[in-house]
Length: 339
Image (cartoon, rainbow, N blue to C red; front, side, top):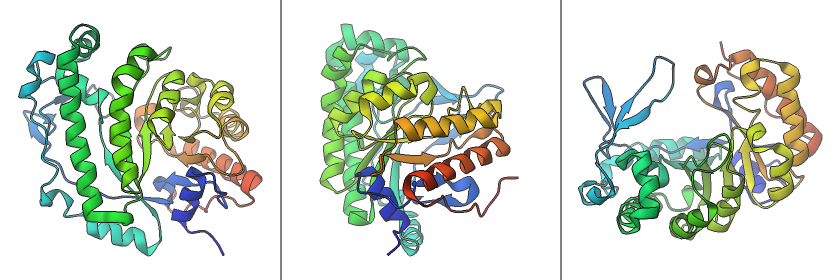
């Protein structure tokens, strides 16, 4: 019997033998997963977005998501002024049922997202430099802010679990941790401060039966080990060349599932078919296994990275060939080609 999209994703994550490579390329109408939405209170003031934590976002002339420049906390000592959203409010989940039903018709793998889950939310609230200094020189206030954020997100997790139960298959979240050369902080500090907090959050997710997906940019080679220890099931890495494909495969292949694609900095923007296909082959050799361990996914904002539809289609074809070689079945044919 053929596996459903949900079963393909779950088999890949848990190394249980998917019949093909799982795919998340909605731009081509091919997505084994389904996003379950919840509402927020983000608003616009004087042309700037203000998110519901009170952070003001600015954008450059280039097309991108922007970044928080207006921090509501002058420093970590003001942590009591941070007002966490109330994720127990029923209105937040009004659109979820329709999305769940649509996903269940095709038996797709469902996911709820949490943006800026801990470290990113800390420095969006209090400023990047303030947080880095506070982790070393103002531990008490750094912990107070981190624990407020953590409590809010545990509340979000519990509310989703109570409302959706086993219909929800995973939580996905973001926390960028690296520059192009290394993590922002030492791994000793990371493991001391962040690991136990991540573990509390991820344990709460696992208790409800959900898988844990984390996105993190930069050269986070050591942080991946920390994610594994914290209980992450899938790590989203969009710069495999910056990380070192062979090194990451040597250290972590078979120990965590990778969600990735041809490198969004070094490869996709070149529109070079040989390089795009080369990344697919290298990732197949070093990151994938016949039992699973890899999810092929899109970088949603092609304009921001300078990758057009042709480059993405070349990539899709390359990973389809990888799927055929490794599992005996190609990816589904695109049903919604990008214009």
